[in-house]
Length: 403
Image (cartoon, rainbow, N blue to C red; front, side, top):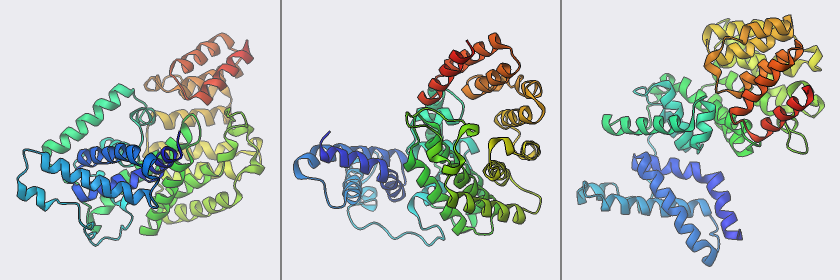
């Protein structure tokens, strides 16, 4: 790959989301903005190797994408010349409407989280369009197939077009009703950064950046403090999640002396503040952050207060009664009360059949119970779910170990 091509790939990866966010804001159309940015990338691939990488690649991509959008609008037979002129994007970018949200990407996440769409549709659209996640990544996060996710995205965009849902930056008064979906989007973006074949630091860093902006935006909102704390406490373990060969290292086996102490301290402080401000009505992010804090506070895996973690999962189930939460509670129960109790708690979670971690957790509990044949079958089922490469290698090592 040439130097210019490498620079382009880096620019698209690091700045592409903001370029797209700017185009959506100025055109009012996700499809038009996506097509324009794609054409700008193609033009860059043609010109940069010959003319050299521009001093400001992001500005170059933004300018060219805006010009491409104008050309597309003018080629659209359904638009009059007057309409095309009204959307002329070749001049300076229009002034932003007054809003407490000043970051372009965060503005567009709020925009995509339109109350006319379901919560799942809001987060899916934001993750795919603005956060740059591939359909396969979105499908893995939503525990569905890639084909089903592609169909869902198609239906969402069709509904937006048919219903005329505007891509308009919401007013300050409209922000609170969109906050839950925005928080979900940011956290799923972070999760995508740590759940793939390797840690995607740019996604983790961008999610944390957005989390900090949200806390600055609404400093009294305990759920946002919980969200940021959860990401910080998880990110503190970034370098210990895999070994030098890129193989998965489970939480119990991680070197806690290598966790980022500054992130842990900041996260623990945020958890304390969030739980105090929630006044015993903690939401899902505060409770998940409290669970992460219980792990981060333990000097070793053996010192983990599993009774406290089970109690926190019990509270979390009241506000988020999902099978994933039930699975995590079952694992904690297995640590507190033994593998038989844990297995009984997760055995009937049939809705997680496509989730490799459900099969893997069952397998580990079966190993502890000495039921090795059943454990091998469960490990095989986990592998059949096409897990990320690091998880796959771990599962294969576990199968080999119990043989």
